Amino acid sequence: MRTTRQSSTRAKSGEMTMQQVMDMMQGLQEAMAASKVEQERMQADLAASQARNEELFRTNEELHRGLRNNSGIRDADERECFTPPREFSTPFSQSILEAVIPNMFVGPKVTFTRMEDPEALLTAFHTQMMLVGGFDAVRCKLFMSTLTGMAMDWFISLTDGHITSFA
Image 1: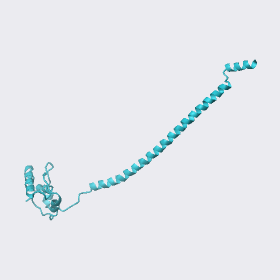
Image 2: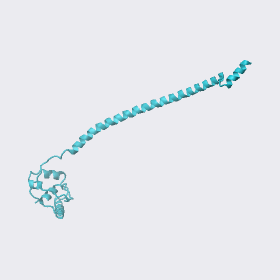
Image 3: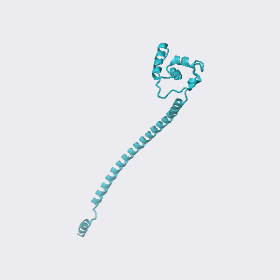
């Protein structure tokens, strides 16, 4: 009787029974198993994330390499754009070359490719020059801007200093 009284006294005083300890241990084991599953899932997510980061890093490096390669090409293209225009002889006399075309001056709106009638080109050019009031040296310089293709090639092949007036 004494042992029964001691057991009930222990239970009332907060001591745990063997069953309660077993139940608590089983609950802890289940929590640990669930935690282990969660940890494994998180490890798999981390590995996938690291693999994706490595792939992004490689792609980024390839893009940077491509940009460096393309910028070298672009720099060469830009240098070509900024090279001064080729020099060629001009049939104009020094006085015509030194003449300044006023900033507000509107140039002719005709072009000659050797397919048009040369007389019609000259008439249209003279008419436009009369309207804007271009003097002789300006007419000479602006006439050159109406030529293209073979006509321009012929014009610049004339002897240096050959042209002294529009006439």
